Amino acid sequence: MGFAETFKALSDPVRREILVLLKDGSMAAGEIGSHFDMTGATISYHLGVLKRADLVCETKVKNYIYYELNTSVVEELMLWLSDLKGDK
Image 1: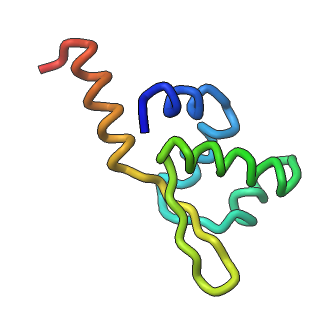
Image 2: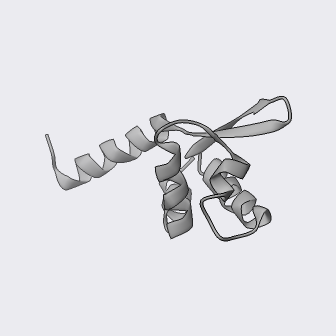
């Protein structure tokens, strides 16, 4: 996935907060939703945007879908930003 899709996904504060929640490990959609005052459909929309940007991946376990941070994409983005800044 390109950086354009990644930056678009990161442009929303709710999606950024979801990523913060996932930094400590995987969570089910309902667990994520309990941190926000919005409908499950809205949380699902935001998770879909993050998934399309490859910032999160999902794992199905029985009747639940667990989401986790895709650290490889985050690392790639950080390396690119570091290179842009000129860090050696």
